[in-house]
Image (cartoon, rainbow, N blue to C red):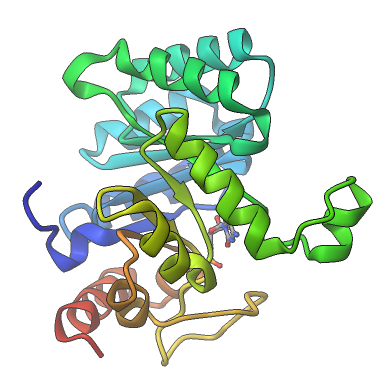
Length: 238
Ligand code: C5P
């Protein structure tokens, strides 16, 4: 695989219900970032047409719908998403091996345009006591590694993980397993509600492939300038 340019590592989270706002940002950022992440908020409000409209801006799309259902239903949902040619899609790894294998198989139906399929391990909003409440006695880090390993074994291409987990996962799962990391903040940006934040350059230095960055770009007075500044910081390793 050819090495990614610094800006290609950035996926901008367009967490909005406003299609016009999303399209204005996607058009402005085209060529300045690697792609756009669209999640449940956008999808529920703007629908498949909204996803198609963002795709039509020429942007790669990470469709962050975190599917979790029986294998047949997840496979069908992934198959339906192929209509937009997403670059990345994701499923909850706790849906298990058969569900993930079904997801990977559906994605494969797109041939060389197949999206990368990522697993979501433990949501970063959950701590050990939340896990315990669901009957899981492991530490968060053990559970993340277990689910990431299962994702790889089940044929997924990578996982979404916090920066805290990157080094451990990279060490255990190898160089080609994709690690997609949110919770990123440049030094000059506000942390907002993110608690365990890491700078863009630090995340890449420890082994992240793609960075999901929302408000430092979308809430900036000049989103293009903010994106360019982040890409320059990644390039310089600062
Ligand atoms: O604005 P901000 O950079 O915090 O946006 C981060 C994006 O990544 C949001 O869409 C958020 O839902 C998502 N995300 C996250 N932490 C996770 C998983 C996803 O912030 N653990």
